[in-house]
Image (cartoon, rainbow, N blue to C red; front, side):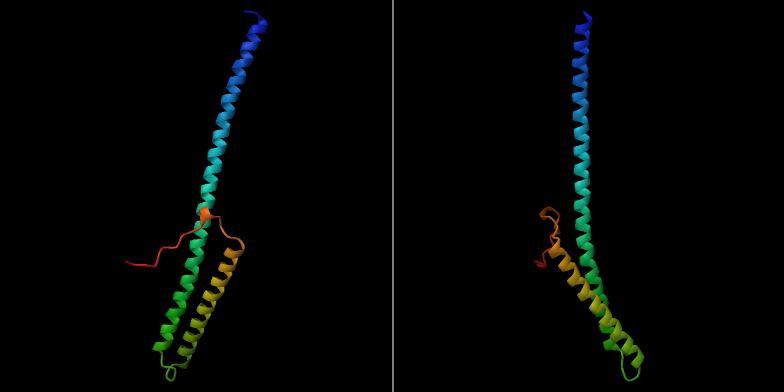
Length: 125
């Protein structure tokens, strides 16, 4: 085998090896990008659920303090009644503001269709 034939043979082997390595690199990058997309989708969905949970928690607290207020006799415990009314109003206000701001945010920057959280149906059949 001549030197030039040996060189051309070794160049073909190197080019084949580089092509194989390049395909492996592309596969690794594609898998990493796919995993990153899945993480971002999960993050968007978790964020939407946390937003809804925060509003529900504020509403629950407002209702809790409203019920407390109704149990208190304002003539015998005016301070307690005032405190319960204030707490109820505060939590209700937080629920309304939070819900409004989250809805505005989702309207201005809606998540892609593949990342939207589908709320469970309220039909209990």
